Amino acid sequence: MFGVSRFVPRFARVGAWDGSGALVRDGTVIDKVCDASKEMTMTVEIAVQDVEGARIAHEEGADRVELCAALMGTGGLTPSFGMIQACSHVGVPQGVQVLIRPRGGSFAFTDEEKYVQIADVRSAILAGASGVVVGGMTEDGRIDVPFTRALAEAARNEAVRCNRKVQVTYHRAFDMLDDQFAALDTLIELGFTRVLTSGGAACVPDGLGRLRELSEYAAGRIQIQAGGGVTVDLIPALKETGVSAIHLSAKRTMTSDGGPGGGGNGVMVCRTDRDVVRAAVAAAR
Image (tube, rainbow, N blue to C red; front, side, top):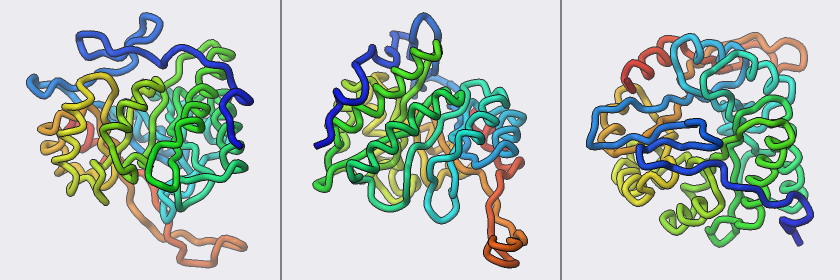
């Protein structure tokens, strides 16, 4: 059986939301939540696959990046140690959030896959990540609490060893859960920084109502970050929901010569689109 104690000891929460809507840890403001009653900016996170993408995001004013591999076709997998290290040196204000996901498909994992992710969390923090994007669920639609706790605590443990702060995000497995409000309570209890969600829908445009409900229910206890089909044109509507952060890939597809072993000529790849990042940041401000 998979257990927490065999991996990591328990540590303090990632942070706490103060009365002004700031996420504070060790006296440092990590992030801000949006008060829908006021004119405030939204945090912009760009999903990237490489150093070029991280650099574009930084140069165009994004607040942070989520780094993953194989974004096209899988929705993202765990990137390499070297890629994490290189992107962490770019200097994005809130750093690099690293997706931890060993394969595509279901978010219900075997014990072996859980062990891999615990190791990947530690490696990501060691490589310089400022946070990890993690999660797991049971076959019957609930958060896999022991595993999810172990993921968060592995991140905190390694951050303490590295004398750094860490953020922990629950990824879009959240949208597959049966009771998202109960799930929020669980993630708050586990000390998560934020949840990435499309509002339980296939994509954000179809989940705006639920995003508003989740934001109201969270009430500043955890950050609600909208992701999954976010476009620049949708950002004004997202501001109205009260979510304080958005996540988008801002990508363009192009044809690349695969070369030997690369799938032959005419392989479709995606790259970070500078114009889309710039427009998203402007719309969020």
